[in-house]
Length: 381
Image (cartoon, rainbow, N blue to C red; front, top):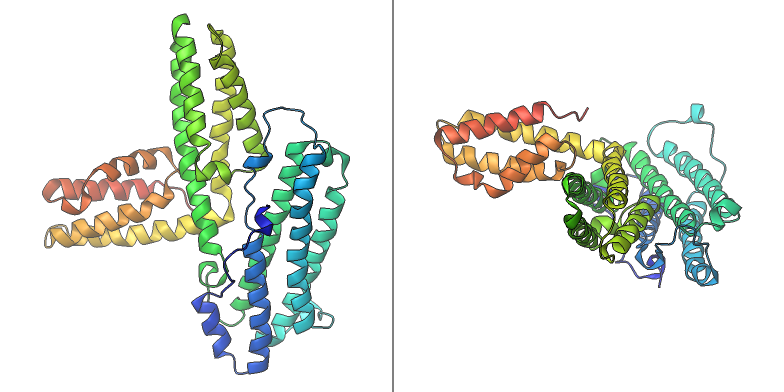
C-alpha cells in the first residue's frame, strides 16, 4: 500500500487558524474559507513524504519494470486525486475569475483572488506531473522516477502551505507555525534529517581517516565496520526522509562496501575510493540547512536561546538555581540546531552529558559565556 493510500488522521486546523475564522464578521465567508483550509490540511497530510525503502535497488541502471509501475501507479493517481480534491473545494467555495492583483483590496476581498490564483498554479503543476511521467529520461530510470514523484508531492505541499499562510496573513500577524497544517511535523522531520546526517558525516569522516591509515590486514575490518555504520543509518528516520537521489548514492555505496566486506582480502584502494565518495556525499547533505523551513526555524530558536542565556547570565550570581535552569532550557532548545555548525555541534554533544541545571559558581558562568559565544558565531541570518 502506498503512503498516499494509507489513512492519515482526520485533518484539523491550528488553534490560531480557528481563532482567525471565528473572528471574521461574515459568517458565511468564514464557513467557506474553513472548508478550503480543511481541504488543504487534508491534502497536505495525504501528500506526506513517501517511504521509498520498498522501491529501492542497489543496481545503478535498474529501469522501472512492470512491477515498479504497478506499485507507483496508485501513488501517482492518489497524488493527482489529492490535489484535485482541494482544487474542487476552492472552485465550489470561491467560483469565478480572480481579479487583477492591482485591483485587490485588503481582507476578505483579497482572499478569493489569492485562492483562485493558487488554484491555477496547482492545476498547472498537475499538468507538469503528467508531462514528467511521460518523459523518457524519467521513466527509464527507477531512481529518477522516484525522485520526480517525491519532488512533485513536496512542491504541492509547499504550494498549499503557502496558500494557507498568505491568505491567513491578510487577517493579522501570523507565523507559519501558527497557521500552516502539518508545519511543525515537517520542521521536526527536517531537524531530524539534519541531526542524523550530520552525525553520519562525522562517522564517515572518522572512518575515512582510519581507512587511509589502515594496514593491509585492517582493510576488511574497516569495510565491515563501515557496512555496519551504514546499516545503522539505514534504520533511522533521517534515511527514510532523504531525497531519492541522495538515497540512491548511499544505497549504491552500501552495495559496493557490502561486496568488499565479503572478500577475504579487499584492496585498500577500492575501499578508499568508495569511502571518499561516500564522505563527499554525506557532507553535501548539509545543504538541508538552506531549506527555508529550517532557516526560519533556526532564527526563532537562536533568538529564544539568546533571551534565555541573557536571563541566565543576569541571575548567575544572585540566583544560581534559576540561572542554571535557564541555561539548561536554552541548551535543550538549541539541540534542534544540531547539524548547522560543527563547533556548535561539539558544544551541544558535551551539553547532553552535563547536568546543566545543577551547575554553580565559576563553572555555571563559564558555560553560559561559552554558550553565548557559540550562538554569536552561528550564521542564521
